Length: 111
Image: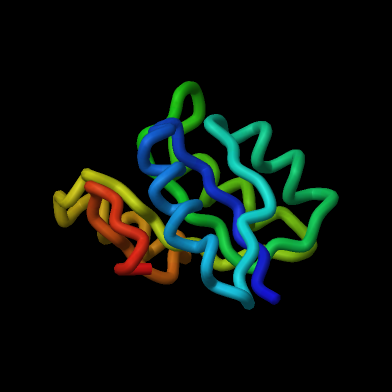
């Protein structure tokens, strides 16, 4: 079983992703958050395999989140879901350790 956390302030995107994963038996979306600090607190106490992450978040952005998760004992993989397609943002996210980037609008079948 793969445990996934969604970190995105776009409620519609989260709903789409959750719905698309409902029929997948070996994947579980265990939590979703709109802000980085709440997600970090959850990750400190729970084993998660993957975080689906938007770069644009209220308060601390996705880049700050990518920096902070490096300090965790169990660092989950990340896939960035974002409407930011500029090369600089993509390169920065990849250089910070994200596994992949998916451009919004969200479509869970891409995942």
